[in-house]
Length: 391
Image (tube, rainbow, N blue to C red; front, side, top):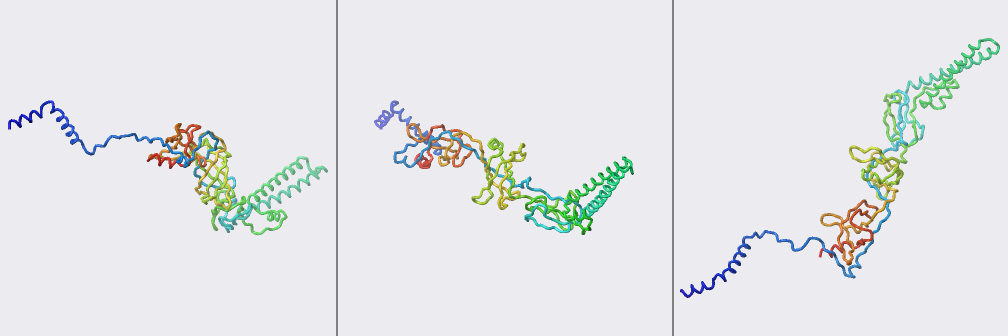
């Protein structure tokens, strides 16, 4: 028994005991560590450049980027309105109740065409006033001519003859004013000629006529309604062959467009875009939308565009700009949705390069940062390069 004890003591001598204790401590630390502790990353997450074989390079197409001249375009929304230079409201030129409405909304009318009949006392009063003014002017002119003849034979004084001329001129001015009142009331020429000839005219009815040729877009009166002269709106007539489109342009895009720039209006019909021209840019900013209204005069064949319709608008700038352009096919996006492209390096490999995009011009993007003139990018086969990079 003593021999076994002495043997164990020799085996666990201080020189041999230190390694054993160190191993035990290491095992203890491993046992105490949590199994959920994540291991440290063994390599960087930065994508490595891709090297392709000659056969693989046949699957891609490259393009050398260079400064190019281009014309920017602004795409936005707009609201259709009447061309106010081609639309007008018809007010009642006289008072009285409406007898008949002769047209319906949507009907085409010519300038001067009757739109409604009104039983107007103003109409009868204007005809009576013209009759009286016409008779007074004739009589005053006869007296003036008689006094001129008597003056030559010293039958009247010069003062009396001159007064007669003044009275005749005043009466004729009243006659002309009464005639203009009839014209303002749209009395037809036949009725005026009958009055001038001294003939009796039938009971006159007031006629509301179309102020311009176009389409009746609004009917605002009904039979029996009492009209007030010069204040009651009756109809709106508009020439719809052209309309206004009020496009909303942001402050950032305002410097891109100018008066006279061509535009296209999407009417909602697939494949149909109506041509137009920017003819006015507002001088103030809309406080609600913080946008500026650009007015576009657009063709409207067949009345496709209607008032208050929302449309898509594309304004093409006539001013040429310079910059780097990259085809849309070269653009890819990473896991964070950031745009990038593959750029050829000096050693022939392909590196992922993030880019800052400007506006889209056709099938290309303007690149404001990330590329330099003369660099070559993958424009066809970028997904293949990305697949090889992820292997």
